[in-house]
Structures are given as structure tokens and as C-alpha cells.
Image 1: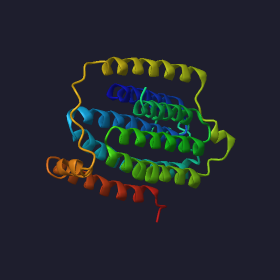
Image 2: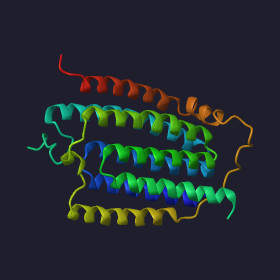
Image 3: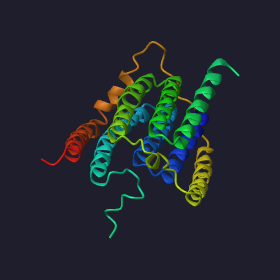
Image 4: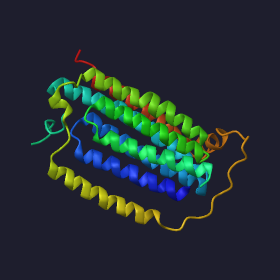
Length: 97
Length: 167
């Protein structure tokens, strides 16, 4: 089942990348990043059946970082929405010179 | 095909189908709910891979906490206007993204095809499932664990400062 897990993980990661590249809603782009983190977690869990528990410890760390990233990222999105009244990434270009 | 393999493939395919539905839905709420479905299927896969603790944490943290925050923000921003909903990029960008995705998938599948070592023996069914994760977390990776607590503190302060209105 390890090879199948790695295959599922690769497919999910690719779906996340395609989502980031095709969507313009900043919230959905963030959710695609979460999907990519989940795909990597699946790889970690599968490989922990081969290399020991370190993989599962790393999954805990990845989840912590994902939670922190979601909190800060969504706060930034709310802050941008308050200024621009939109979360469309085409319109968020305040850092452009 | 035995019982275990059938359900493993079933939930793997459910996860992938839900992810595809998630990326293609126009409404952010529907997308978030499909993503929750993907996360539940992944939790089942974790449990089937003998990572019961990670599976439960996946449901509690991802489906229970992170996705609720996402849904809450979607609700707060009230993205109901049609112009906000139709947010998929044009045909050129989609073709480019599809090509990049196919290239990445091919690359990942080549990496995955290498020889893997044998399975290490699974723990007996009735042992504690938390202990094997907690022991390295609090000994070998103690410094990393403490640094994550600083990271969480910084994230809390940052989220409050960024999201609050100007005083």
C-alpha cells in the first residue's frame, strides 16, 4: 500500500498546484496550499511505515505550521479586503512599483 | 482483491475525486466542503496505514479547526456577488497550468518509482498509539517542538494585529 499512497500523494499535490495556478480567489488559493500540505503529510505517513516514527512526528510539525499559516494568511486577506473590497488576486497589486 | 485493499483504493479515489471537485467548484463554500471531504478520506488512509493518532488529529485540526476558520472568513467577507464567484482564470492560463501540472505529476511519478525498503513490522494491535509519536517528539525533537510554540505565539500576535481595525 506504500506505493499507492505515494501515488495518491503525488496526484493530490499536483491538483493543489494546478488550483493555485488557475484560481484567482485568494481564499481558494490558500485552501489549495492546505491541500498540498495534506498531500505531503500522506507521503510522510506512508513512509513512516518504512523508516520509523519520525515521519509521523513531522506530520505534527507540518500541521502546526499549517495552522499558523492559515491564521496569519486569513488575517492578511481580511486586512486586504478591508482596503480593497475584493479578494481577487488580479486586483491585489499594491506592491507593484 | 481483499477487504483492506478495496477500501484503501476506494478512499484514495474519493480523496482525489473530492480534490478535483474542490479545485473546479466556483463557490468558495462548496470548494471548502469538498476539501473537508478530501481531508476525511485522508484521515481514513492514515488510520489504514497504522497512524491512528495522526488520523484523529487530521480530523480534529484540519477538518475541525482550520477549515472552520476558512469557512468563517468566507462568511465574514460575504463573497456572494457573481463577479467574485467566477474566479477561474482564462483559457491560456488554464492550459499553462495543466501543462505544468502534467509535467510535475510525471516528475513525481518517476521519483516514486524507485525501489523501497521492506516494511518495518507494525506495532501489535493493543499497544499505545500515542507513545511512539510522543517519545521522539519530546526527546529527539524537543528543540523543534519548543520553536513551534514560539511560531504559534508569533502567529497569534500577528493574526490579531493584522485583522484588528485601526484603533
